[in-house]
Length: 162
Image (cartoon, rainbow, N blue to C red; front, side, top):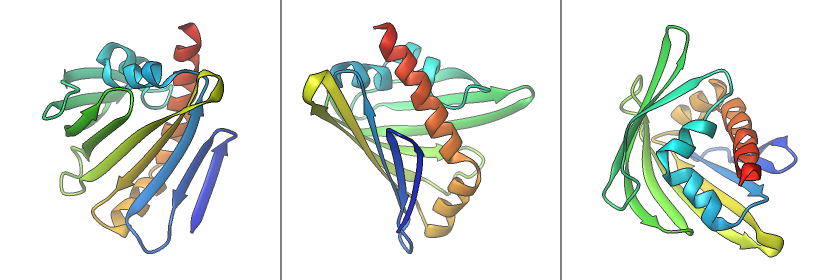
């Protein structure tokens, strides 16, 4: 198993030979606040992705059967993503697809679970299952780790604001 720990509260595991990534991150906020930050497009665009990208949301219907589309921009470069919500269980779980428009055949299925912790904290657990080990490894090589860590640091700041 390959383990990348990039932040004291973030662990990213990419087991050898399987097409998934496991992500664990703890937050100093309750599950309802972490859930809202993942399902409210106005909050989402304040934290999702690295600091050097600006995000616009074209569509965001965070409910079972809903879909989303958003774009990250850096100068003239645009990175478009889209997917659908297969299950949205308030304050507990989100199951969605995730696709980068530049690689439409590389669809990932992401299962996000929120676990309440003592002291009003939350553990977020995500399993992202890609279409192949090669696609998963390509995502890792593209700097995915930086975007996750940077984004969750921004989410920490947003959650601290209340």
